[in-house]
Image 1 (cartoon, one colour):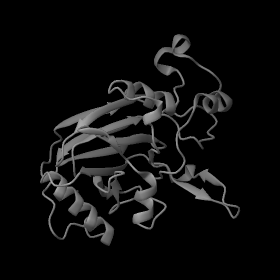
Image 2 (image 1 turned 30 degrees about the horizontal axis):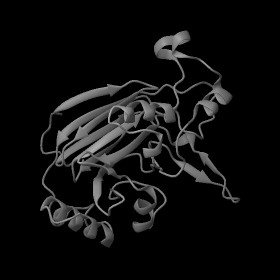
Image 3 (image 1 turned 180 degrees about the vertical axis):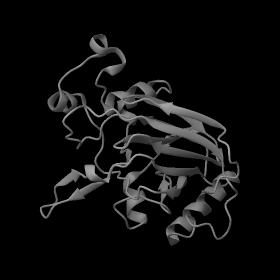
Image 4 (image 1 turned 90 degrees about the vertical axis):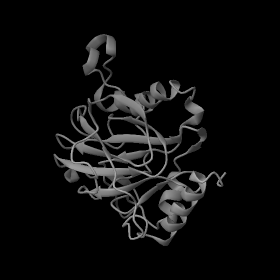
Length: 244
């Protein structure tokens, strides 16, 4: 861990099938822990100073020559800057290509169970969960881009069909995101769109905010790929007021 403080500045447990959003300042780290195993944490990023700048999944994968995300990878905006870096990860595989669960998927797989019927035990879907949070910032469906699915490993068969590797789930799995610029974080704890579990998954996620140590020249994420060095330089210019 690279936290400069041993105690978290703030702790929050995101219940299963829930959603949340918060603005995280540059220089803070968010540690996320899959408490019971089998969690899926959907996540999107926006620049709170310019909501048109968003997380760009294709560029994040393409410029780092990877399909999965783990320690060392940086999460890029569509303006070539870095929202955050993955500074720690004991799960080892997070995906950003499979999108969101929808109401139709939830009903087809596990049946319909509304909030009126079951209150907090209802079966929320990822797409609607994101929409609830986006509305708080004047955003809507048109502003939704590709999202992260943390704690979800997907594998491909010989025909290229993707499936969720349920055997990868483990209680206590965690990763840490160090924020390299102020970021609006939107998240949900709804099932992964490829989840075929026998019953609707209910997996809470622990969220802890820490003060990060300063980024050194030999920082692992900064030097993980040559492209990341250029991303950090774009951030430096942005914080000097030179970048667009």
